[in-house]
Amino acid sequence: MGITTIRRLEPTDLEALTDIYRCPSVAENTSQLPYLDTGTINALFSGANQYTLVAEVDNQLLGHVTLFLSTKLREKHTASLAIAVHPEAHGQGIGRRLMEEALSQADHWLNLVRIELDVHEDNSGAIELYKKVGFEPEGTKRLATFKAGKYINLLLMSRINLGSTDPT
Image 1 (cartoon, rainbow, N blue to C red):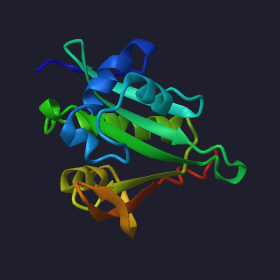
Image 2: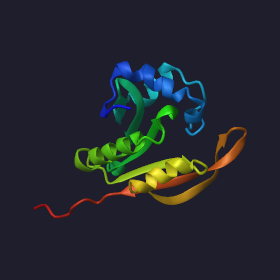
Image 3: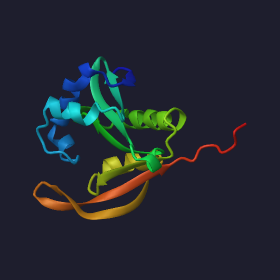
Image 4: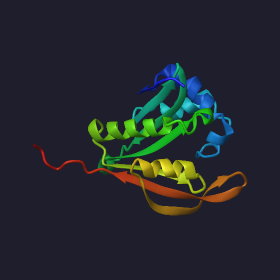
């Protein structure tokens, strides 16, 4: 596999992003229903208060990470996070590269202190990745989502970065 390029989402990427979300193993670990169409993907990831990066390898889009910036006045320092990587590219470091770059942008350009996410409690690979990049569990939402015919728990995680308080 070639070199991973991380860049901002372009409108021309929406079809490739839709293809990722059409993979059953991706859709089952989101809050969305399977078989998303391009219009739904466009609505989810093209808003003004979103910051989406994509990973491209050999000119093929293989993943994204999105920071959903809070529009609440007293929560401008927070964002929620969503990430998806094509199943054929799992285990190749793409998710980690996306997460690291999104967190760098959050710290150095977006002035974010708190990044939060929900993850299915049975998604051990994602939980491991989130812990590696600094997320910590905050709690469990019991029976919070419906997956494959049963209710499951969501794990709430966050990463706090207060940065430097020294202005010099």
